[in-house]
Image 1 (tube, helix red, strand yellow):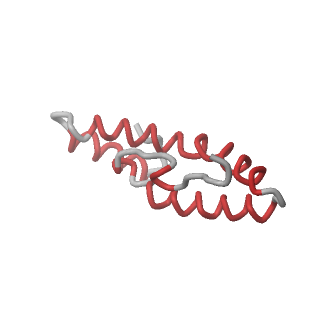
Image 2 (tube, rainbow, N blue to C red):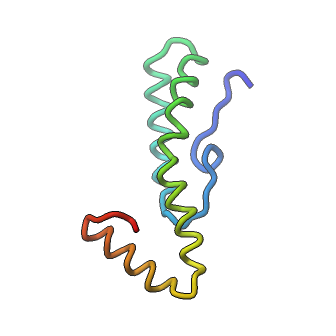
Image 3 (cartoon, rainbow, N blue to C red):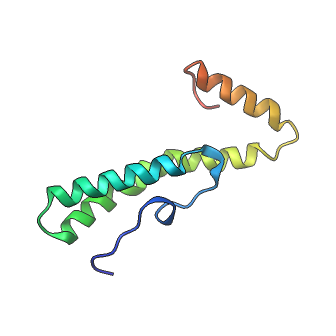
Length: 94
């Protein structure tokens, strides 16, 4: 539909297990504002915003899906402890 776009959870619905939803929504709003400011034409601005929208959320969506599975494993506490330890040590998520 012309002149309409999505942001936040409406644009990239995912489980809360990556803890990224609010951050992505704020980033989406900022990116949409920048696209609107950079383009005179609304549709051009929306296309520029939407082109970057999904790749930007892809990593958070992957982490969310992975953590959703992890949280329901029999050894979920160990998995999450190791994951958070790696994050705080500057390592990879898994």
